[in-house]
Length: 420
Image (cartoon, rainbow, N blue to C red; front, side):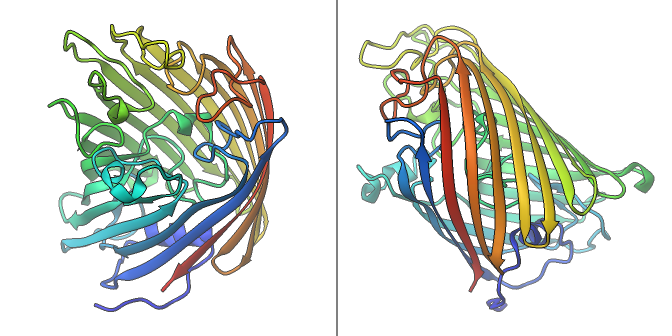
């Protein structure tokens, strides 16, 4: 095996080469990702959450400095991504990926990153967001597997700044309410289907809940999905689900953030989330994606004390649901306009940091690939909230005591991709 020294491709080509290349190779690649940005709101507070997602403060943010070591297996199907055209490989193959990250995009894995002494009291953290083995077996029309820690397959957006599908610097409310990553195993099977009807696959995974290496109960969480691709590969349909008992241990809510529900009687409390995404490319220049989500958390019987914000512990069955429309116009090989419109409702205040109510947002940006592997992205976002709280302009990190029901956020970020 050898180390690949080639330069990385533009971002859209990077994802296609990673996810749609059935041939694979025996190369081990060492890649880097560096992302930083400047973000500013229109009110007196320095707090840009939730519009900024993991960026709480205005100003310059180092989102991530990453090293990625990987070997891709030869396969015609990938867990979390789905099937793709090409011959069915006759031989089994294997691969792996290890990510090391330093920065402020710090959705930590309970039982791993938060136990590192070097992270205590710091805003920029050292993380291992992904570390997994994956492989292919010549079973049926193709079977692949993944085992370890990996970004979730539930939802439209992912935890890496690659486009597609993450074309915006700020994230949707659907992403704010979904899991980020899992520790567990997943298998993906390409299902027999006439080529004229497209491509079809199903995935099934068993994981340690949401963002957990350690779980506080003996019940595992299931992830399952169905993925269809049109014969011309221009239309993708993904139906994704996660279901499991996710109650918090009394006094320890880190495992289940941002949804905290405690049963003093030991009753198991169900959480589930469902996501449907439709992608379609109208032409080489125009594409769109529509994503709809629904989530549910069963309430517990323990009420938070007065030192915690309202809704910190969920005491009644809570639901969240919404939809976002994403449209992209690439009028030049290195320039793309993105527009995202959102409607989202938190019905009973399920999120530990957000009040119940209806959230609406409109985001526009311009992605410019200045050169091979370097993207600069100015972005403007408007959020509006209807409900009993004021989620914008409040104290960090709690926004229940905010000042505003609407917020403008402007940002400029740069991402550098490079293969060593």
